[in-house]
Image 1 (tube, rainbow, N blue to C red):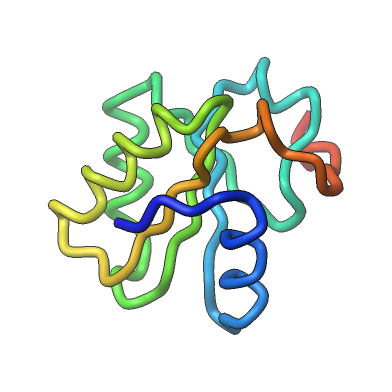
Image 2 (tube, rainbow, N blue to C red):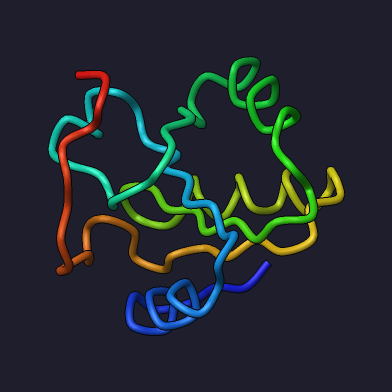
Length: 107
């Protein structure tokens, strides 16, 4: 797992063609907007979180964020333990995000 600032996270993400963005916040938190193309997997629902991440391609790169960077850091650690090739945590999470957001597509 790498812990990156917003600028580093966005720069590195822009260089990867098959990267996946995961929003680890709750549905209620996501109502304020998500990073474009993010998939929402609520870390606070541990059984569902594990079920959903186990379906993902472990060979891809995963850029994970939450509200503050704490849950996403924990999510990256779990993913690393499960054999994911590359996980990247957004330090400061959405609390410090100053780039664009889009509405979640299911709300």
